[in-house]
Each structure stands twice: as C-alpha cells, then as structure tokens.
Length: 312
Image (cartoon, rainbow, N blue to C red; front, top):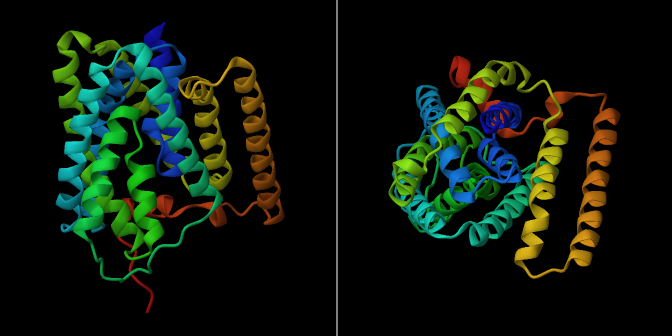
C-alpha cells in the first residue's frame, strides 16, 4: 500500500513539476509526509528519486546553452555542503522533533511558490551578461541546499526565485545554471542520508515507486507544459502544500487546537479566494494560457530545440 501511495505521489509531483517548472520535491515531500512517513525517510526518498531527474535536467540545459560555468561551482559547492549538513541534521532528529521542523519549512516553501505565481517576476532581458557574485551565490546556495535536504525539496523555489527577482541575469541562464547545480546538491543530500540512516534506513521499494510514478507522468506533463494556466496551478499547488503542513507547523509553534482550527479556516478561505480571483482573471483574459506561463516553462520548451535566437 505504501508503494502504491508513493507511486501516485511521484506521478502527481511530476505532473506539477512538468506544468510549473518547479515543485517536484516539495509536492512529493508534502504528500508523503501526510501519509505518516518519517521525515528523514521522506526527504531521503525524494532526494534519491531525484538523482536521475536532476542529472537529465542539468544535461539538457547544458546542451541548450543555458548554463553559465561561472554560476555552477559558486552555487553547487556551498549547495552541496548545505545539503550534506541538512541531511545529517534531519537524520539525527527523532521523528517527533523532525516532523514539525519539516512542516514549518514546507509551509515556508509553499508560501514562496504562492508568491512566485501571484507576482510575475521579470528577469533581465536575453543577451544580458551574467554577473554572478560569490558573496550572494555562496550563502544562497548554502541555504538552498540545507532547505532542500531538510524539507525534502525547495532548491528551485529558494534559489531560482531569488536570483530571478534580482533581474541581473537572463532568466534562462539563471534557471539552467541552478538546474545544473541541483544534481550536486541532490548527490550530497543522498550521501548525507546514507551516512545518517545507513543502508537499512532506505525504503528501496518506496524510492522505486516514487521514481516510477515520476517517469510515467513525465511524457504527459511534457505535453501539458505551457498549455495549462500556470498561475492558477501555481496558486493551487502552493495552497495545497501550505494546507497539508499548516497543522503540524502551528503545533510546533505551540498553538492550541482551537487556534489551529481558526488559522486553518482563515488560511483555507484566503487561498480559495486567491484561486477564485486567479480563475476570474484568466477568464477575462480569454483563457490565454501563454499569459500565465512563468519563465521556467519557457526555458523548458527551449530545451527541446536549443536556445531561441534573439530577435534582430
């Protein structure tokens, strides 16, 4: 039964990632955590399942010319250190202590996704020379890697969204370089969980089912990419992640049951309101999906045929 749930989780998470350009890790982690799985097992399973996908994604961006070699080591090295540290810390925590910590992180990441799709961030125009700064990339990679390991995902929402919001670098260069760096982060997180949990701590069947679900969903998600209203989906996914994790997060903050119910009701009503507004706006725009597609989806479309040449 656990394997079946993991397979469904992997399928749904890949559908989200394929449609939005981010969200596989935090979506699958939230869904697995909701089934009662231990936080360290959840994050370890997600990171191992992502080894193949992050390698393929990074290679695709490299072939498409979306990767700046100056970015990658400055993000990947501190990101790997952060991921190794995060995996070690999460492995050492008891389930009762780790669950609220992971839930708090996932609520934060869900909020990041929600804001990302509520406010379309505009990056620098194509052709802009990237200007990576070690004093920014190093700490950002360290935090992103730590969050990715302890939260079961979040490298993209934390690192990509932050760099896109600065507007200093062409969007496809940011996304390609961050994606290429993510493989190193995933490897280091997996090593950390391997050292912390040991071989006996890895649910091989769960990992295989999670990976299989993602593989089965990949071609379907690829066809849907850019065809669905990404803003509506992003708000829905961000809201789902927040809703799944808000209760244990509030408990970790010491909230009583009554306060938790009130906050859950307010949050749910607010999220539904935001979703309704997004749907109304989409309909007023005549259902034009391309208006809603964020920069991540544009870059994914470019991967198939290489970079799109700049207009004269």
